[in-house]
Picture: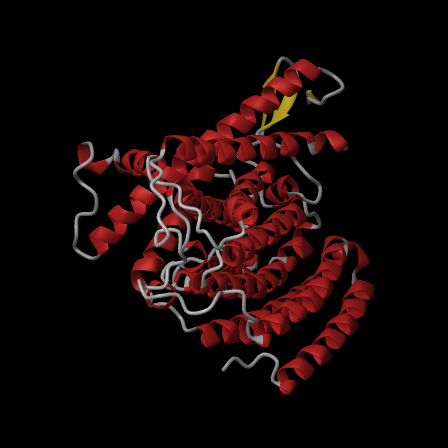
Length: 338
Length: 118
């Protein structure tokens, strides 16, 4: 068993590999974000018997690049009444937590480089899950700040609604995954993957089906996707907290939304589907699982109508919260008595 | 131990630079033709009515308070869940008592109508 590469035994190799892993993951996430917008338009188009984008490049494949360029050259409007600094900071405060959450997601086992074992993961925190929950919580500040700083009624209502929704469902999501840690005995994502490494039947989706369903639905609400996209309910709130944003600042919100989709898909794959386990190389397995969940999210968007706000709060507090608690008690009883 | 947080710091810096860079770049190359109406908050093209700096419904504050209460209880469950298998029966009964206390508060909040949304 080769020694684990660390800062003390080969600092130059450690730092350069660290940078390489970070840049690789960052670029992959940005690429998936760009092409998720294309995939979403294409898939929803097909589901509504339309074609989706076809004009830019072959099959419309250059559409995300055209969209990005267009947003770059748009006028950057800062409303006169807004709180300028907060208005400027808000999109970054949403984007940065969304992007840095990927740091703890393992995308493969160890590879041996120059006699050292190098984990295919940016960093393995022993409190990985708490880190993810903390970053998810930080994103709420950006939403509230964007809504408040715009000084527009639509933005304010969108921002506050969104914050209430995100924190309500964060609670249910946090409770739902506790049952997984009762089985794994660790909060490190690497440890959780290792605990599911036996066979396919060891994946926690089979021992924790209720937790899996709860987590997928609640995280859908947490990242403001349909059918829980009330903050951006365009029929009543125009565009919610990003109504006043234009140009690249608007693009940052958009990218954060898709980055959050990737992160949630990757977390679900790691907690319930064995992470990078599967027939191909580690990163490819994880990507396939992530694509599956993203397709599911897009499919859900094309299928379900938006829920009403009171229904949303009802579900979060009176259905998901008690179900998650019940799941913990059942898991505890099964582990102790069986 | 601290070295496992170094990559996160680097990632934060890269993400921040990316966000700052793209916003600054588009600010520099985008057109700038401000007008009083363009810089006004969007209100479906109608003349503005008051400002948005108003008080919001108290329901949102109740949700925020309930979130903090229940989230703290959730945080207590995390360390327990990690050592649950080692604690065995003792841990199960102990946390049963905790969950029952939590449920009493939950039922109280429900009955008081704090979870209703009209």
